[in-house]
Length: 183
Picture 1 (tube, rainbow, N blue to C red):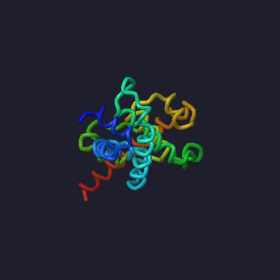
Picture 2: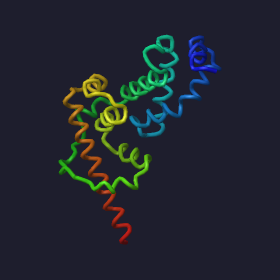
Picture 3: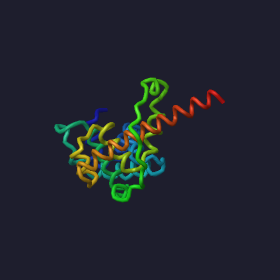
Picture 4: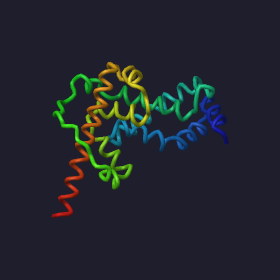
């Protein structure tokens, strides 16, 4: 069965094809959702809301404009962003000024993908959203600003602060591991 068959079945509201779409794409789309809503239950809620939107808009999908996977990812990202409180940009909790820490490349040698995701998920919401959109998804700052309802300069600033905060967290993690080996 092809993707086009699944799309045609979903357009007809055929539960069999809708189930196939969910089964085939849920793992990937849940991963996308978790980047923006790290609490598992919230990520699952976002995914469920996104699938409702996907089924409601499947007629509008145009395969000439891109892959189905990309179209659905965009819906998941937009659903997650709308769900998050926009106050995170205007009332972001104060983050202390950090020096620009330079880490030795060996700090990254032992990190697994799950470790990196865990660190990213500890970022404040606004920083995490911008980091994911810019670094993981590859969106330009202008588009991030439009998606999040913030200035392009705010997007750039939040990305810079997110990177600095991640370096601090990595540095602290490395220090804790060093102390654990000693102790």
